[in-house]
Length: 519
Ligand code: GLN
Image 1 (cartoon, rainbow, N blue to C red):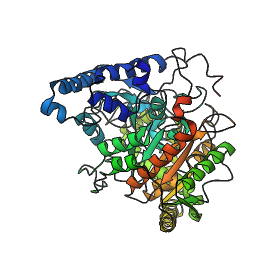
Image 2 (spheres, rainbow, N blue to C red):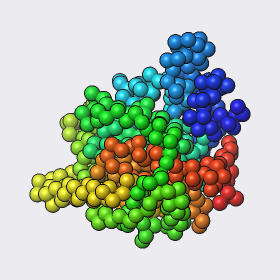
Image 3 (cartoon, protein in one colour):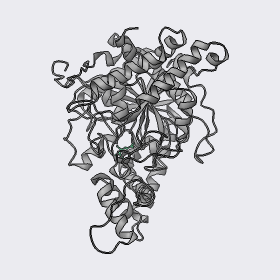
Image 4 (cartoon, rainbow, N blue to C red):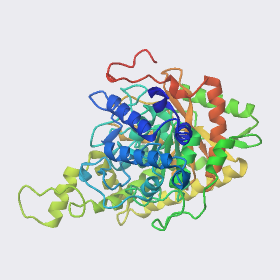
């Protein structure tokens, strides 16, 4: 395989070549590490990674190669993804590599334990390339709230890669990693997927253990896969998912038909519901155009497209921005300068525990984290609890009922993933409300716990940037998402003559230079 093929292949294609011994895991891993060295650093680098795990990744790759060379039981016992490298969102704890959550308050902190998903990845021997950038504690839609500087969108380095998991999505889009893990509380896997032309999946709440994912809003958080194809996400979700006694919300369902569903890929006879409230006003013309083309393709392949109405979705964003900060204010209370990471001592005056906590939190948290802690503390305070948090929980129930009614009429729901393509770095940084609106189409799934998948739907005519299409299924029906997603992906690829990312600008060391001319 050429160097270029090594980094642009899908994870499943790499897995086949590895199994056939046409290529070694060391070669594959080195090619990705070289790519990271080439495009990630420097002033105009992609900056998808906060930490690169070179030595350990190569050691794991060599172990896989040795097992394969030995043949017999050692080779037979290898997981299908063994030797395929992966990048991990830096909200997921890992032994031997720092975990920062994108925050100064955890800078340099080393976890004493591995997240369950990391244990599974290590057991399956996927070399871990490193930890990817994110908005602080996963709060944001652009990675600009990372304490360590933003990630750039490989399609246009002056634009955001989405957030909070912009690092994982950009790494996969820039061919720095074939696979990555993200977390999705209100869209942080799906929206970055949409704006970088990659695939991202938020599994059913409880389908993948959250043990070791630093909690943002525990009733909404979900770990999930990031990849370049629907099949690759299915392979990764099947690997990291399943029941975990360390996560009391984890489901006992096996979720073991995801790969088979992605390989089958069909929509014939399915009812696909277009959510009336997720489109129209506020959605960019190019996003709507690609979305409607996708509907035509689905009809052509034998699906029935119906319109469904979810009237309470209009309140979902408002409810999310009460429930999420309430949980954030509680979850982030543990970062107190005593138990983890940073400790800042007050400059003068008495050295009380409250004053150490205050000085640490003032210095350690960025503006967005502070904003949400204050909002959440307010929403939960005596006297306001019923009016804010209580009302938001009622809306949450109404959103769940809207989903139930919609799924009585349709097998899967469909919408654009995000209302616009990638915006410019800095464009929404000073306007939190404009930033929050990016999640208008993704948040309902988190409130209801249902699974959602975003896949590339083409390029918007006005700016040449990727558009995401979102599919939603009832809780526990993740396999259905993969079946429909894979079918739509092959219909779209037939139309474009290949994967969408083949149209992305090829970044070089001077990544640098410019991406003009590709638009
Ligand atoms: N962008 C959303 C927010 O800022 C979602 C974050 C997430 O899913 N982690 O809260």
